[in-house]
Length: 70
Image (cartoon, rainbow, N blue to C red; front, side, top):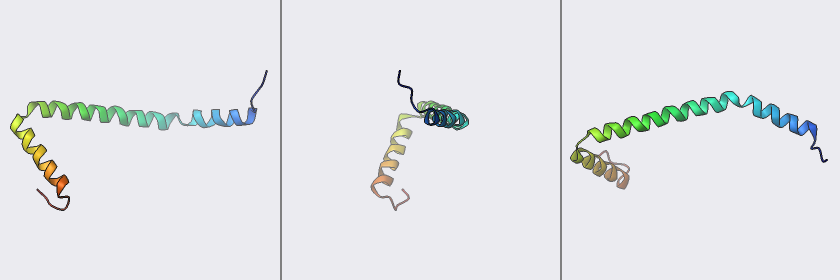
């Protein structure tokens, strides 16, 4: 049976095991962002269609004219 190099595998395992806190922090940030997205959707659903249309128009105007403060 072919056995890979022990040193390399151990190094990879050590690196992976040390990444736990970083992965958890990233996951926490992801969950926080998803909650923000859901809150934004709920807030938008509470607005009138006309308010949303005006906001979209302002956003499009800003994107078309990046230097202006429409």
